[in-house]
Length: 598
Image 1 (tube, rainbow, N blue to C red):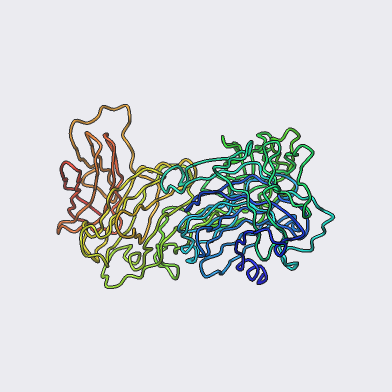
Image 2: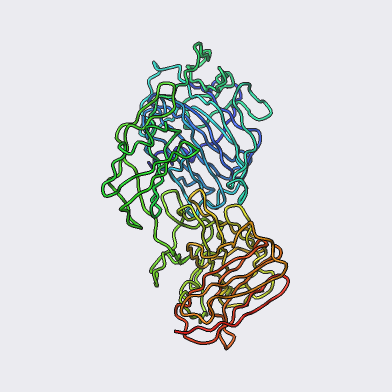
């Protein structure tokens, strides 16, 4: 592996000047965009070349300066079930990952993708993430880069294998390419900016290279870049050999579907496949082997890649090693049927779920420790760095959450059963001591729920700040919280997720003409219902205070539509006595006395 880094880190573009000193025995093709791009998602549908000693690629590269920034997909012609993913940072260090894939990439077209943000680089195959690098070194991949595709011959036999020129001509084939701009919080964070189906060569977008580099045993020639039947072909030939592709390009689906992931949420199991699948075979429960689990009510979802089951016998927070499927067919004209395939099946934690953001060591009180998100995880944060807090003297059930946080957090994600949820976010400010020094917005699944959060402005320094958002509807099994910086870095210390106990009284009711607050029963023993009415959309804070004016519980926080709502309040860990409900809105504050009898 050291050989690849030694070779590739010396790569520089040496444009030929016609001297035979630079001439090489083989020619091939490379294209790169005229424009450079900072962050985004690049997808390509491609078929790599099968031969020892060559590699077919999609990559990004900083062509504007000598500072190293590069992100690679390289498919070696000698490997029939592997792709290699590499990043190079300004210190010219490279990190390489070899990913086993479930098909021969030289035999048929498949979609490969790079997702590049300030916080991570991830690689995808057929729409599913297969590898992610979220290490701190990714932050230095901060320069605009050209998008490039080339087909070349490494001079390292150890890495690329032995080349036999009797295999020439060879072709790396590309059906289409798409570029999505990074738009956090909008359009699932990536917005399509352009695509190219290669029906014609767009000279405004692409340049055909006439260059080479030191570890490449072939020269890139513009004439070795071909268009054929709506495909871009990079052709490897001997020197001075005319590049051509005389027969039609064969593009046939020959690969059977395979399971990419499997998750259990309470009584539901969701399996995602690598491609759209046939409804009859996918919904046949006898095509699944799940030791210890009973499946029923199979439903192929509209994407035709995901299937949902009712499952019995599952235990939360468990990995199921004996989970398989077989006989699942795709939608090809001649359907491909899968053999026995293992499913990476996990079950999610039971709710309520509390995560100690920033604490990746020992946690207390049943909370889960901090972890970084990737597609194999149930939950995790994206972006930022762990911040240890000091000088705190907080008390209460969740006081330990405030000891650590993640500063500069961009996203938090959690897999959940589809349904309605309540979210509590925990914050503390220990550093900023002026209004406006740290301000950020919070979005949930693309919708803003808190604007201009300024922790210092709300509670000062070293005091707990909690925000509750009710009525969060999850329909795609993913909760995504986006923290949009406006001044300074967003910060988060803890998160709690539970099934929502706030219900709207009914959409067919008349809109209330005034703000109202009522509890029933009152007096109450342990549990009471708190009903509040809103004549128009407004920001809401609903809290319980004791007789000394100390906050005992925050029940709701966020923006609510006009209507009537009911919150279920359970007075765990509170002693008998008189308490006060305060409903604070943008227009006014009202209160009601309640009596707890135990």
